[in-house]
Length: 313
Image: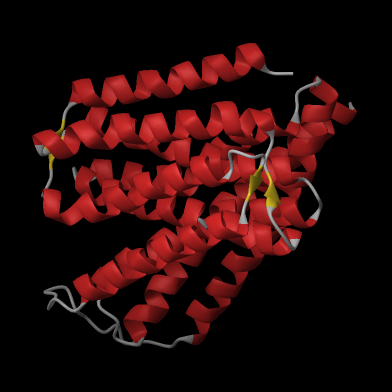
């Protein structure tokens, strides 16, 4: 009975987090349009930031509670899920051509973030120097978005209407995400304890996929409109934020170098880097994502999940 309650609370927390992210994103977009901010800037910044809020709050709350394995595992696992599952499914369903210039820089930043994480966490702790490097990469990401936003956009529009309802939805969305994230962390930990599975494994699989649902929702919407390139851009931005902002923030909460488990150093981080490289490098070389390419990326993620399940303790 107690296990059922834990599962129900975990599921409710997941629903709250996803629903809150959806409402928050829509409200933020409405507020931006009311103030006359071009949709290009909204998409390049607000959407990516909003879809990573679940991962951010789950990891931050975990770190504050001293559950650093869960904080690190959720951030890394979310990047692996975004790339190996969501991006792969997107191009598997709708292959797309891409302009190398439009995603090359973001791809390089993402590979750089994953590589820096592997290097600066090798000793079992994410060092202060590593956090500084990650933050520099994030600043480069922001600079690139701002520079791109200076290009005149055809979709500039101003939405007339009262701002108060949008502000209320914004607050509701943010609150739902915060409450849902708290429920996710507490009950994911309890679920792992009851099933005899470590918090690190739970966080890199179930919790990571759960907090990646906003990206999945965005991707499904883009695929329906046959705009895979849009979903790819959002996933790249969300992944950069996951690695370059969430982990340094967790380190700040931990008030020093962030402890990283041996499993994360030897398994989760290397797999994350491999999945990113398999997903992005061939596509950049060929200038397009193919179904075969999506299938290979999905197989890499499946191999990671199977290896995690086999070695789970």
